[in-house]
Each structure stands twice: as structure tokens, then as C-alpha cells.
Image (tube, rainbow, N blue to C red):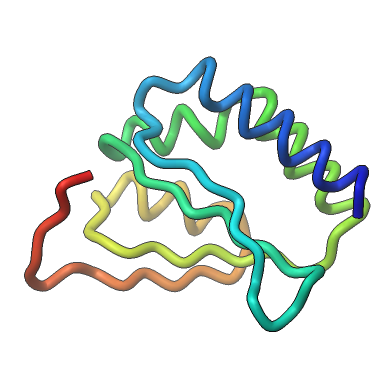
Length: 107
């Protein structure tokens, strides 16, 4: 667990340093499972998401997660463009998109 948390911390810092389009990036612990976590992320736009998934530290994190973690899925809250949706689908991971129908964000 310590090694995994170090990996997450390094990844978080790298994202903060290299991705101006990442508006919110947290690593949140599941209140019911002390070994389960979720990344909560808010992007400026679809291009910022594409930059994130191609960022070398993020790619390194995903590779190491595949070696040491179990389970990985993507939940998206908000509307995404067709190209971004296609990119998300290309990962082959479980994907669920909750498209916004109303509301606002001040993030």
C-alpha cells in the first residue's frame, strides 16, 4: 500500500506541474474499503483530457497500477465531445458517462 500511495503522490504532483488544463485532481479513499481509491478529476475541456491520458507520468501510473492494483473503471460526469468519447472508449476499460442535463459548476 505504501508503494502504491507513493506512486499516486508522484503522479499527482507531476499532473499538477505539467497539466494546466487539469482544474481539479484528487485521490480519494473509499470510506468502506481502506484499500480502494478513486481519482476525482475536472478538466478545462476535452483537449485537456486527451493531454492527461497521453502525459508520460499518467501512462506510467496506469502501467504500474495494472501490475499492482486490481480493478479500474472510468465514470464521467458531464458532457463530452465525440472525439473524447471515442478516446475514452478506446481504453477498453469499463466506462460509464453521466451526461449533464442541467445544472452548473463553479470549478
